[in-house]
Length: 544
Ligand code: F6P
Image (cartoon, rainbow, N blue to C red; front, side):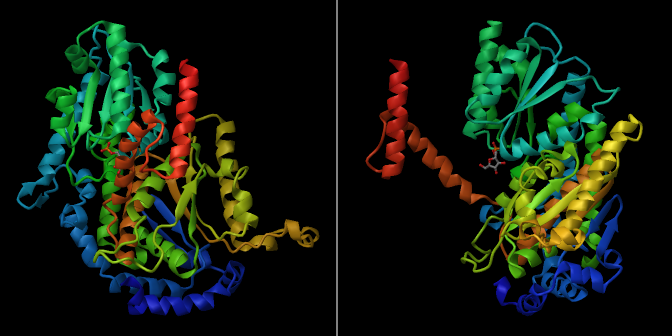
């Protein structure tokens, strides 16, 4: 049990002392708190000085990491041991971003070679499409690509395409890349009328090739093509569908021929898969070279994580601070606040990465744990959130830890007005984290008199600063969060690579489909039956 180890107990008593100390006092007592608690590596700066910590806190947390065997766990992860014990699988997303010549064999399998071979096939498809050699049913070159996928088969590519749009530059043929994920068809309904069927290519991205959301959207898309083209289903499958999957048999049964399939492996978790062929939309949007730079940025962060002493190791520090807040300061909400519109999709991406990985309450021995694990995580572009939920951060009753994420430079060769907007955004980012930390002490004395104008402060935050946002630094940033999640899982003694909690819901939905038709079912609770009857009544009324 993590909570019975010595370092945990030591942190508990240290936290009792720290609960009484305001961040403002911590700043007052150390003029160079930033120097003491900011850490940098390559393009990244991690400022932990606005966290409610002292030197003692950090050394106790580092002791906790040691006592939980973090070093050994990192080796297991990178060496391809079955760290996902409930599914008896490795979690080798780090292998996906190894440099071309790096060797990796796991249980006799040349993993490094397999990864490079799959990247090569992906590269071939990207070139075919980019060079207008991939043609639609009437011989027109493909202009629009629609990625159909959900969860990890959607959020990573969606986030990266939005973040790196500016890299869809001059030397890359422009392709419109769209993303469709919602089960109810809302996105397709809106998107399809704007597309030309003969120039549209669909990527069906599903590791399992069994996710109903994705298959329902793929079926709707294929029917749209069949109706518009009057061609055979085989021809449509060949010219308009690529499958990205770990289940080639299932994709073939659905109709995607082998030459249109890009494969991943069981050891790539869905939420860790944007580095694999799941990243195809990213490569189509920004080009293969830029995609490889994203992989290289992630690899550099992997090496930093693997080789750097924990006291200077960015993902380790990020994780330990979060554990401190959750388990010792009792802060169970975490806001992700990028001050950069290009990172608008980052909070949703991290919601899956963190909450699907660490939203667990059973430890590796199969026992229920008695301490908190993953907090509720949410977020939005910070400057927009300032006009929405920041009120709660500043004056609510809920303690919240925040990650402020920004890049120091932007718009180097753009209009001065845009550069000024970047400055404005940075100023807001820094002003907000400062106000959250020190509270009222910033206000003038007149305002301090009114209770409703009172700012407690003492909300801890981390600022992650990139020198600038590029494919490489985005790769490093995401890898940093992935490793943070892993470190937390080690401290909490849970498996971050399975997601059994989502399976029951899928099964329950399939039995409710029949109940929906019948307007109820004796085995169900009265709420569900009442809602089913309501739906059936309305559906009958609109049909008649
Ligand atoms: O339902 C959860 C989940 O399994 C995620 O873990 C995964 O990223 C998503 O569904 C999509 O799964 P697939 O790629 O197999 O369609």
